Image 1 (cartoon, rainbow, N blue to C red):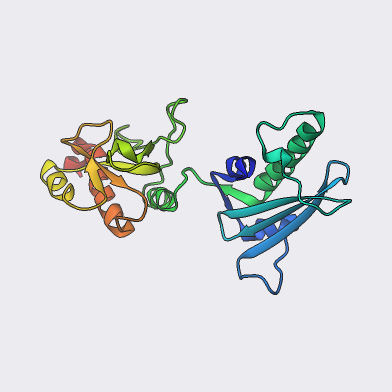
Image 2 (image 1 turned 180 degrees about the vertical axis):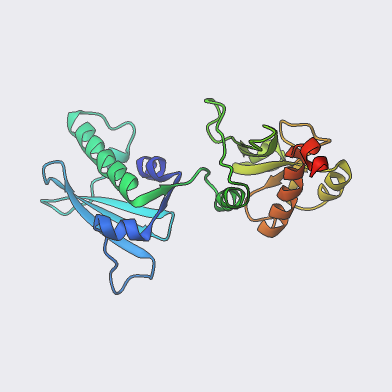
Length: 235
C-alpha cells in the first residue's frame, strides 16, 4: 500500500487540462480517462511512473534506472538509512509537485460529500469552514447573514452511528422539523444526529445510500432555518 501517495492525493481531484499541460500523455491503447507520466528522480537513479485514471485514482511505480527493477523500500515505514531516506524525500517531492500542478483541491474524501459541497457553493455561495484543528475533516456551512449553521459535514467512524459497522465515513448533519426527523429515521442512510441536538438535527450517510436529489431538497429546508426571520417577514 502506498501511504505516501494516498496522503498526498487524498483530498485532490485530477484536472485533465492540467495533466496534459504538465506533461502527462494519453496513450491510444489506454482507457479514455487514463494518463501517464514518467520522470527521472534522484540524479537519474530512478524512473518515476505515474498513472492517473479518472479524477481520483492514481498509481505510482518507482524503477531502478540501471536494472529496471521496481524499488519499494521507500514505502516501508521501518526502512531506515540515508539512501532510502533520500529516495523517499525525492519521491514525495515529485508527487507534491504533480499534486500542486495537476489537481484541484477537494474539501472532503467521499464523492457525495464533494457533490453536496458543490451544490451549496452554487446555490448559496458558501464554502465549508474548518473550525477545529483536532478534527480537520469537519466542515461547517453557515449563513453569512445570520451566522447560523445549516449544514455540517463530519468524518467519523461508522460505529458512531451503527455499533455493528466499522470504517471511516462522512455524514451530513442538517436541521429539520422534528416530525420529519422521526419519519426519516425509519429510512436507510438516516441516523440520529451525531454530536448535535437530536430533536432538531439529523445525520445523513454520504456514501451513496441516499440519493443526492433527496439530500439537496432536505438541505434547502435546513437552510430556511438559518435565514433571518425578521427580514423574511418584512419582505
